[in-house]
Image 1 (cartoon, helix red, strand yellow):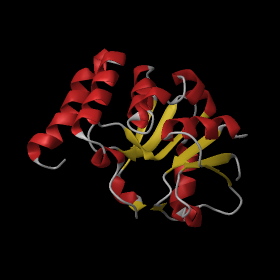
Image 2 (image 1 turned 60 degrees about the horizontal axis):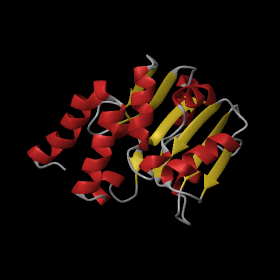
Image 3 (image 1 turned 90 degrees about the vertical axis):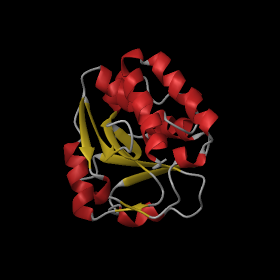
Length: 186
């Protein structure tokens, strides 16, 4: 049952998520680099095919954990449904190392924001299955997500960068960025 590596990129000394991970599972905590660099460092260090990326402040049951692990397959991205793009968010994201290699890892130019969106788009572009887990199944104890902590110009730059990198997804990105701002939910 230890055919998975959990990677937790964090700068925090408190890693609440570890309490939800079964003892027999390898956990790699990466405290160096930007978020996307840390994600890549963790995947490179993993010795298993299945990878589960987690934020440092989420909780879930052991049965939920093993259900997610059982869903991870080649050419499939499993994760918590994101807020704006109908993809998955890095708060909980599972994939194989083969999938990570196929999409080129996490784009380190994005530093600490929207690397998960780019990774999910890259999976979707290749026709990989996107398996979305409802947000309600993961208890999050931390502060608001990265987008809530970035300024509008920074968020716009990232959206434009992703739209130029993935033109077919430009409308989805635009709708995901502007919709919440117009509805007042951003």
